[in-house]
Amino acid sequence: MTEREARVFELWINGMTYREIAKELGCSTGNVGNTIESCRKKTSGEKTYAQIWYEKNKERVSEKIRTDPKRAEYRRKYYQENKERILEKQKERKREGLK
Image (cartoon, rainbow, N blue to C red; front, top):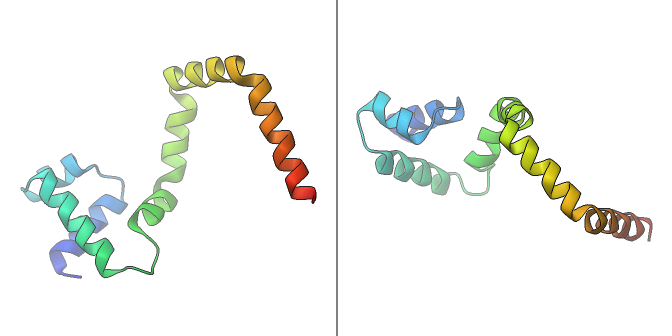
């Protein structure tokens, strides 16, 4: 991995968006995406960058999802509308797990 690729990856893994990285490094968002893709190909067989990024940022992301009122409202409505189907799927999974 080149020095530039390592820098882009470091910024991304620390939670910066492609746009923020591009602004920081003075390049385009497309260039940032291509650089991250290049790094991913070089490390095939290891954890993907998405997995690493998620592990590093899961608390921040889950907190945002939990506290975003629009998302909470959507989840509540979805559950209300699909409650029977959701519960039936949960029962099926339990039965399959017990076999």
